[in-house]
Length: 97
Image 1 (cartoon, helix red, strand yellow):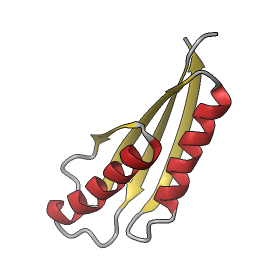
Image 2 (spheres, one colour; image 1 turned 60 degrees about the vertical axis):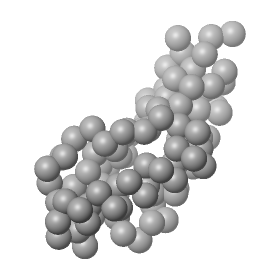
Image 3 (spheres, helix red, strand yellow; image 1 turned 45 degrees about the vertical axis):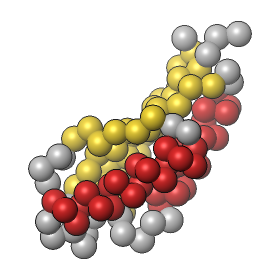
């Protein structure tokens, strides 16, 4: 059985972040919670110098595409439930290797 790899890319708006430090607190919290709760690999991949924007990527590997989608959906729900940020766009890609 081939492994399946999934990538969730989330474009965030962080309205209350007035400085990069404010933004980093929100981003670090989201990345740390996702990594520990869902066992995904995480990174901030764009908008690094913008105070109120962040592009986050979450990667997951599993033996079934359904499991990959379930994990990434959980990550997206966790981000949506955080009142400090707003999702502008989210995309999910899942591929078999």
